Amino acid sequence: MNKVLYPGSFDPITKGHMNIIEQATNLFDEVIVAVLVNLSKKNYFFSTDERVNMIKEIYKHNPKVKVISSTMAAVDVAMENDCQGIIRGLRSVSDFDYEIALSQINKNISDKKVNTICLFADSNYQFISSSMVKEVFSFGKDISLYVHESVEKRMKEKMEF
Ligand code: ADP
Image (cartoon, rainbow, N blue to C red):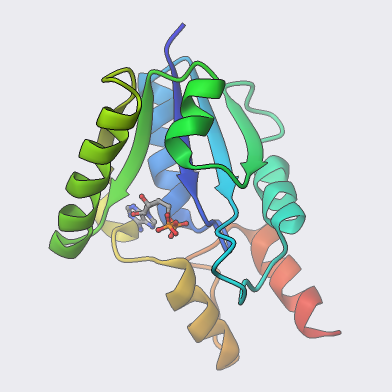
């Protein structure tokens, strides 16, 4: 069985992430979406559980997508879950420079067991990022083009508190 890990912050999951997940599920038997907790980053909009639950809700009818969270490094989560690869989405040249360095480090740490597979989002979704979604939302603008309706609903609910 070909299993891959798709790690990230997903704060929140966007249609860019969803496009990468869709492509990954067409290529592999199982895609484990891992919400990773970066302990040095404290200003998340959603808690880890909220981020995990939003992704679970979207993929509740897709048996190929599993959702987990971890405070470990992505490469360790990949090895722990027997994933042969780590999926990363590329948006720009600046993503590329970072990802190529990370992929080499992860290959070394895993003794060449975990490779990185880079995918590109379809053009409509290519430039969507979680930070852009939060910024547009903070100005009271419509974000339905960028996130699943259940995420938009959760963001609105959160602002009511
Ligand atoms: P991170 O904090 O690891 O960058 P993100 O949640 O921002 O976590 O993103 C997770 C992964 O998804 C990264 O590989 C990122 O480049 C990719 N990604 C995010 N948005 C897009 C998009 N619109 N198109 C392609 N890849 C994307």
